[in-house]
Length: 195
Image 1 (tube, rainbow, N blue to C red):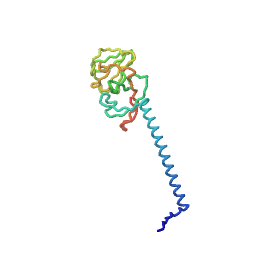
Image 2 (cartoon, rainbow, N blue to C red):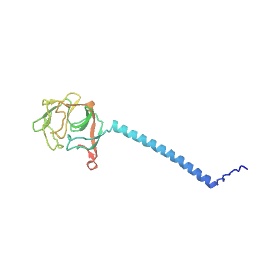
Image 3 (spheres, one colour):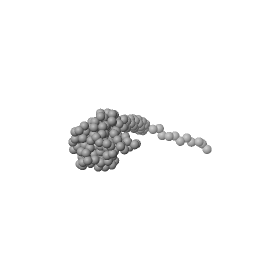
Image 4 (spheres, rainbow, N blue to C red):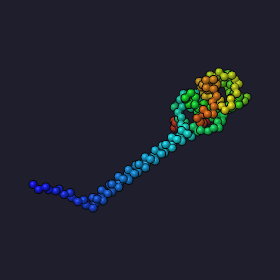
């Protein structure tokens, strides 16, 4: 019996060109996909780095800053060394991040009367961000002088906030401060500057 060879038909020029186009498309597609993924990974890493080092994004838990901030708000903070009176700041406390308002800085004297009116260096503070005043949980001796390198902070919901009025939290050192809260980004209906 004779061994027959099956011959394959020779492809036409059009078929070869079509196959060549398909192969080029595959190569270009892979190349584009690879470069797009590299760009996305680079941008994501840069965004995480910026968010962690310069613009920490925080979610608010609890009611100690009501009505300024409420449970579930998402805010952006800025790492800033110069904290001014009435700035809202985030700081580390016992492996948590707390959010309070700066009332006084190092060397200033803070006094709070029984109705919750706050005075700094003998001058009563105007606090339009409050809906109610209260002495709250206060076990420090008033008037109180803020120690060097620290700030005196209080929550806006004075009756429930545990803050510098309590020896539990005390004054906040500059090293503890995460940053100054500048913008609320969630919910969108409340998007804007924090004051």
